[in-house]
Image (cartoon, rainbow, N blue to C red; front, side):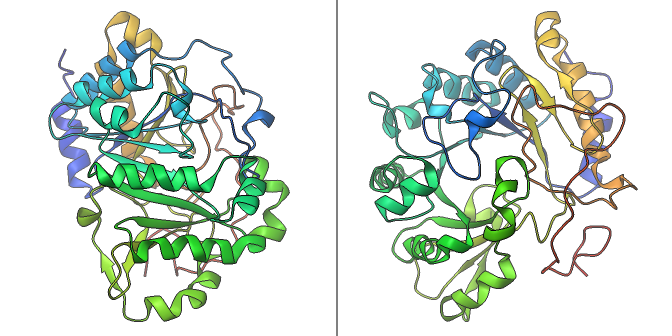
Length: 364
């Protein structure tokens, strides 16, 4: 079905110069690890309180999104690889979006027995983000509540061997700053983008934020010997869209990036449409324009849902209460997270900025 406003909405979105939206699916709330800044078991929606979307549902959503020129889907959790049908879900998204699309996943890299990177790639996965916060087994287990960094690195190597694009996500904490710097050095010999991610004062991380938060501005001097002559890597070269800036030190195979959603919070280029396990789509945390997709799946009216989402995305930068900025990666994955009606989500006070943002969210 073709929505009567599709052409006009697509043209209006293109005219903004914003990067085109993509689908960010949270496939489940379950995880077999327990990272100190995530602690999924503490969340009120841990487990399957509602029936999650099926692979057929994902295929239908992807097909409709493709009609709106969406070419990318990203899967996260929880730990998405714990879904028994994960390869079917990846295949459904890849098939629905069509040839040339990008389908990725964030994982802790300790894949369950019987699941391989080869199977994921065969289903249509094109890139992989692996969470790795320390190379030391003991400290890694302390941060992540288990797991083995060596297994995660095996997953990285397997993905690179299959020509998948790979990013390594490393949340920076003051107690483990040296661990983060060691993780960053993996990009010296591997063609990966290591993303140093600021801790956010949300959810379970609020309990450790005051003592563990380290801003990008504080981290950069520790990297100066590497970054002094580094060149910036274009997002096109990275192969996937990211809000961070990536630098490749001279002679390195990979790059180092910063995701600074606390000190440099802005929605001026955010383009994710988040979709929870049970199919609630959330285009913006400030406007509260959530929409349940299951009724539209049942009634074959996904075109109406996508029109709603595009209208909501068009209004993301115009919220007067927050001058157009917010935590880009605010955690909206949990189905039963309390959502206020008709009022913006109240966010923590931003730390002192280090990126020179203006009130509009743009760099001066």
